Image (tube, rainbow, N blue to C red; front, side, top):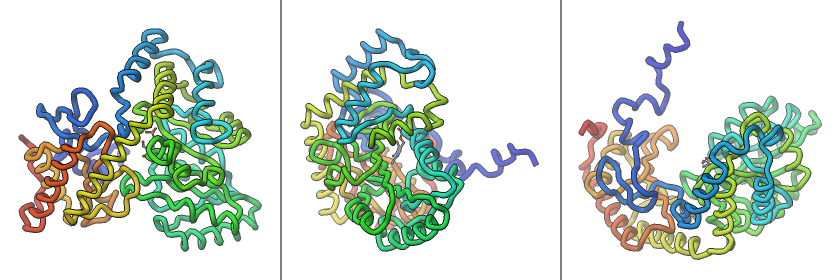
Amino acid sequence: MDVFDKCTMNMGPLGRYADQSEGYFMFPKLEGEIGNRMIFKGKERLVWSLNNYLGLANHPEVRKADAEAAAKYGMAYPMGARMMSGQTDYHEQLERELAAYVGREAAYLLNYGYQGMVSIINALVDRKDVIVYDSEAHACIIDGMRLHFGKRFVYPHNNIENLELQLRRAKKLTEQTGGGILVITEGVYGMSGDLGKLLDIVALKEKFNFRLLVDDAHGFGTMGPTGGGTDEFYGVQDKVDLFFGTFAKSMAGIGGFIAGDKQVIKYLMYNMRSQIFAKSLPMPMVIGALKRLEILRNEPQHRENLWKIVHALQDGLKAKGLDIGKTESPVTPVMLSGGVGEATQITYDLRENYNIFCSIVGYPVVPKGVILLRLIPTAMHTMEDVEYTINAFAEIKEKLEQKKYTEEMADISE
Ligand SMILES: Cc1ncc(COP(=O)(O)O)c(C=O)c1O
């Protein structure tokens, strides 16, 4: 058997649809300035699929800071990993400012949130320790856990009763091994938009001795009175031991950070393999992130605009009888029932006949028979965009009920 055989025989759960979907449903190209309207297949569409929550991707000051830093430093500087030759005052300044913004003693930058998370988990636990995690954890958490030699116990999504059960198991085991317990949840769940039950989780700290790591990729910049994150929203920043944020969403950039107590961050700085053995974030990203953070602190109007759009969109969809699940964040899922074929036809209809571009999420990310169309409102959207979209979705729902979409995959050949 050739290891490459699978490349033709088994393309994997997503790759199996490559022939019918590439370039349209998967790997689509959105062109033009990042915003609420972009070009897809040569036509302008109303876009609801970018995590540019606060609209910073094209904020003039952000663009200026990025361009000036690129002109001054190029994309190469600093060369090498932080530990070896890639350290600068700006990297340290950004870390201090991020820590202050999320109410922690210290922070450390991550080249990509994903790789950072893998190494945070890998560095924190050894074979004596137990990880307890939510069943809907992001792929980067799952990959981090794949490096863990000890036990890991999963609890059904946001099921606190079951979490307690898993903690009891973990306690019993660690009493034998002499290890500790790490609980991992997300702040905002990126597909369904519901929040990790941080209040209930931190309350369990009274009964069990564990450390809590929160991945708040979607909550950083959007949730809480100052955008500090989901733990700020719940008022439990002091109970969340490690706060993870990415620059890929509200900050409209690349990279991320981990924040917590000084000594823990110092430990991570010396032990996260994906950071020690990889090149430092380039200067335009760091200087650009400082500018973005300044805007997050000083221009609350972007967050206010975002939430105005979020409320109007979610209230309007609900009023038309659409199922948006349990979202409490800007992430707005619209749940419909049907198979993969119907899902592609609905998405095709939305894109071609309504000029609405949103993401489609199917099995295996959601259960079989569920179609999840995910809308990401941003500060760039308008009330007209919202109204138009609500009406379009109401029509889609009606057409689905009248069986106007068939089980066949949409034909995207033209
Ligand atoms: C919940 C969650 N965690 C982590 C990441 C990874 O972050 P990054 O894009 O910075 O690698 C993402 C996606 O961006 C995410 O949605």
